[in-house]
Structures are given as structure tokens and as C-alpha cells.
Length: 290
Image 1: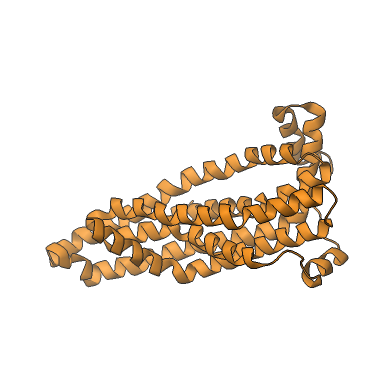
Image 2: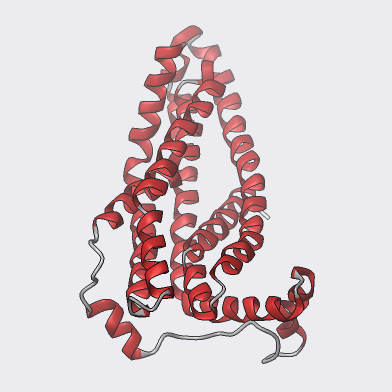
């Protein structure tokens, strides 16, 4: 398989899991085992973490090949600091830009798939929680997840679509929770989507200190996490607890989960716009410290 296509699929999978993360709260509320739901989803999230460990080196090696080949040729034409301004290097940068934007497109594709799978995931994950309650072992739940592959219609996985009434309620009901947290989620998710990619591109823009530029991307990634933890997650937790206590209707939590997923999607689209500005900002910061 082509390396770039593999990175695309890994990125799509990572964003699929990220989109489904918050819907695990709904499964916890429905089953009455919220702590178990959060804990079990950690097992699912391990797969995304593993995909992430594969994605990063594959991306880095792709960038390294582009930089090394083009930069070596450019140094023959324009030795010194002028190498990055040659036509050869600028052409390589344009090619790399397109490749990294293709990876961002994978983030959008994975998020769309995640939105479509939310109803099925909530039902299937609720079944997983119940199965864990009966068996008391994650290792005994896994075969029940794989069972439909051998006997369709059995096991705990279920394909499900939202009812027309639920869709109308989600789209047209006035959400009681103030929507400001959605804008914070949009900002944080767009930054989280581009942080590594922009860091790699910043390294290509400033190849003399590309390792430093790549490491600078952690500033953007950590900033996005801080915004999410402080401005988004507490709102979701508050509504989840309220629904679990029976003080708020479940449709409120469904709306928040849907709009957060939609905000994730818009964040991946916004990341196409901010990808280069963030990379240029990281390049400037790298120049300042070097």
C-alpha cells in the first residue's frame, strides 16, 4: 500500500475514534455505569493511540525524504541559506503541502464516518458495558464483539440509525446549554488536527533546524488540549451528570454530542485554512530560539 494512503487511513481512523469518544458518555448514562463506560472506552482508545504511533513516523519519514532530496539538489544550485529559495526546493514544498493537506482530508473523512456511526456505536457500546457487567472481563467481551464476523446478527455489535423524531429533536430543538463551548471546540480541534502536520511543514520551510521546528509543534498541540480540557469537557461532564441524575432530558446530551461531532468536522475543514499560517508561525518561533 502506498505510504501516503496508509497515513490517510490511519488519520481517518484516529479521527473516527475521537469523534466517537464523547458518545461513550451516552452509553454510560443509558446503562447506569458511567465510570465503566469511560474505562472501557480507554480500551478502544488504545487502538487510536497505536494508530497514532504508526502515523507519526510514517509522516516524518515522508517529509524527510522530500527535504533531503530537494535540499541536497538545491545546495548544488545555491549554496548556503539561498537553497530554500530555489525552484527545485519550492516545487518540493508545493508537493509536500499537497500531501499534508491530503492527510488533513483523511481527518475530515474519519470525522464524517464517526458522525454517521454514532447511533450504532452508542447501542453497541451499551451492549459491551452490559456484557462486561456479566463477564467481569474485557478478554471475555472481545470474542462477543468479533462474533458477528462468524454469525451475522449475533454478538454485541449492532447497526442502528437514529429515528426521524430524534433527528428532528437534535436539529430543531433549542439547546438549553449555551453554545459558546462549541466555538472553543472548533478552535481546539482545528489546532489539534494541524499541530504535527504544521510542525513537519515548518521543518521543511526551515530545514537547517527542522527537528526544532517539529518539536515546537507540541506548543500548538498542548494549547489545543488545554482549551478542550478547560472550556469543553467540563460542559459535557456537567450535562452528562445532570442527565444521569434524571434532571435533564437525554435529548440534551444527544444534541451536545452531535454538535460537538459537527464542530470536530468543521475544525478539520478549518485546519485546511490555518495549516500554512500555523507552520509559518512555528517557523518564526524556531528562528527566534535558534
